[in-house]
Length: 156
Image 1 (tube, rainbow, N blue to C red):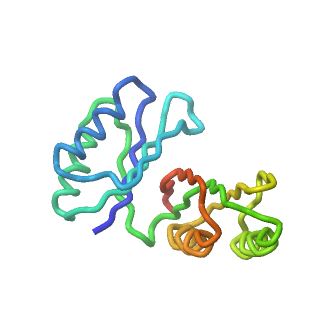
Image 2 (cartoon, rainbow, N blue to C red):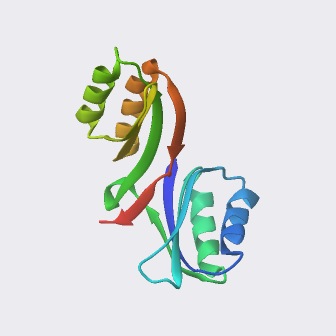
């Protein structure tokens, strides 16, 4: 089962190491991990997507709540949260195929943020399905480089 865990933490040294150690110590591989400050400079949000057994993950959630510097822990179900991911993708582009690539970007509402003679860079946000569909269609042109943020999630 896939889970999105959101952990609100005090912005202190070593907190991320303790959180990731808890997951790895229980045999969970972190699929994506995102850490960033919140509107309060004293707090950061750690968003992790993990796959694993529900009962073990329930135990990990309870142990996360006991960690020093952890303020709040949420294990989101699919329908109780909104989630998005951001990607930057550099695609090979020639004069012959640039129009096709631009149309594909427009179809997915991707922004083209850099154009050179032999490549372009597009930015896209969306859920995992939208990101995967876009990458599946754009890969035939030649993906030169890809950067992904991993999921961000928030309660509805």
